[in-house]
Image 1 (cartoon, rainbow, N blue to C red):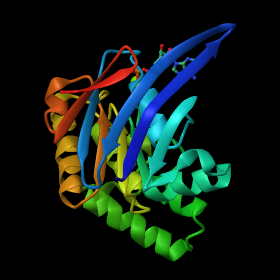
Image 2: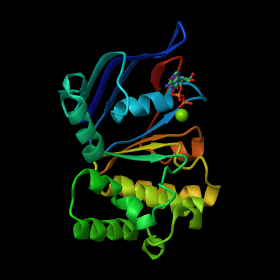
Image 3: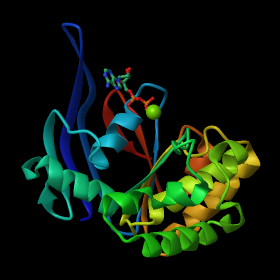
Image 4: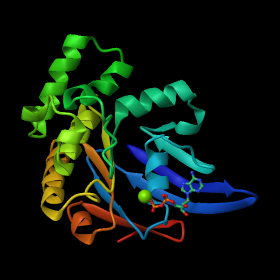
Length: 222
Ligand code: ADP
Ligand code: MG
């Protein structure tokens, strides 16, 4: 199993009060799967996605990625995993405003110390893949929302991740741009990338192979 979560719990402390957001999540995701995570606002979707992507650690429970226990990994090992195995796409795109599209796509390769000429070539290749190479020298402010999200997807793909994690990737887009983004996501899954996508839109979730719902801190299969 690529991803295996067993009895994952996550609590946040606010002042002296502990808020338990995830109350024993069990979830297996196989290589090549396409899972949509649904649930109302505040139900813990982003919390779960961030734990899966090693942006955050669980309070208790076991997370096995490619069979190895995340808990046993050092911060450096986790950083390597994050940059190499996962691609992240967010609702707000999270591009660096002063960088051109091409440079934004290069960022994960900067962390991985990939040489400049290779970085530039790969960035353009990825921008071509998401149909936006013609905008490579534009800054985010010069791009539409849909175009910015394509750049963000190109950035997420550039290290050839196993898993693409998308947190409400169409949440800030009109429905047509949203569907164009979903077309890209579906094609990536057809090429073999595992997709885990958070959404609260039924139509978007319908693009996935499998839909799960978080309710009261627990995951339900639909
Ligand atoms: P969703 O993505 O489903 O809207 P989140 O995972 O963002 O939900 O949040 C779940 C709950 O956890 C919310 O009540 C939120 O306020 C709380 N929460 C999320 N992140 C933190 C944090 N870093 N510190 C304290 N509380 C948090
Ligand atoms: Mg969220």
